[in-house]
Length: 404
Ligand code: NIG
Ligand code: FE
Image (cartoon, rainbow, N blue to C red):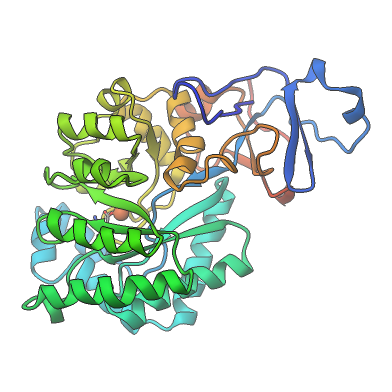
């Protein structure tokens, strides 16, 4: 079992051999070596996990779950040599998905996101951060966030919504950016906060998206409205987003492929979580973030999918985890911590989820693998054999098939 404690080194996932775990209702009440299980717990209903790996329910702390359409045609263009930025400059990219999301009905967007969530749960994910940002106009930004609100009522994964109205300046505002920023600061952010439609506000800081000064202003308004702060930082070029995240006390800076040494030091001092998104590096053929440098500097590194129709069209978090081992040189323990307690920290929930310790939510995943190393090294399409969310079995355990 891996308990993934919130404090301590990222390279120590709190592994226990021959472990036992007890939960009552939706809470974990005892964890330890099976030989030390207190008598009072010996009589309840028990499940033998047959030497499988037991981990906290996985947390995907960066997705763009709700979007209309797909962009497989742009995938081919990129394979033929066009760059992501070039496609975006010609009206494709995010703007393409903005068009399809604006015209899609709420019902259709919700059904599509629900289908993805079923696949995501099957992989062992029990909490998922999800951004708006494909509306870039009040009605559609709110439509995306309302889809998340509805989905929180009708399916099991906990969704943590983030307002990303500052994903890009929409085409109709290109000649009057100031008006769009005013719309975000004076209308949308207060409305999202009043209606409790998001926990965080995110800004894409990049050439072609928002400048540092614009982001500072938008995030100041978000902070005033009581939203937590996140930044899409240094993804395609070094833009100072990591430094800004640290300066503003953002809970996380995400992407960071081009983060500077100074940015990394600033994040370490401020306790900002770095969210690595290896699927986006893979699909865009961009460098992977410097996880070793960050971990050595004392920055915690989360691992997430970035699931979206452009730069990362897969929601497979265990695939992102194996890529983080191979391309970010993270150890399996660091990676598991990055998709559990460190991911929980990136959504300010590390006291409640992401660890298998007394008092934490009984969000548990059983992996059909004898060890953590074996799981991330062997990589199967889906090694998750059971999922428990808040004490409820959502995917029941049918035994282990792995031949040792
Ligand atoms: O995180 N960087 C900005 N946003 C997304 C991509 C969005 C898209 O291509 O549709 C990302 O990679
Ligand atoms: Fe993203």
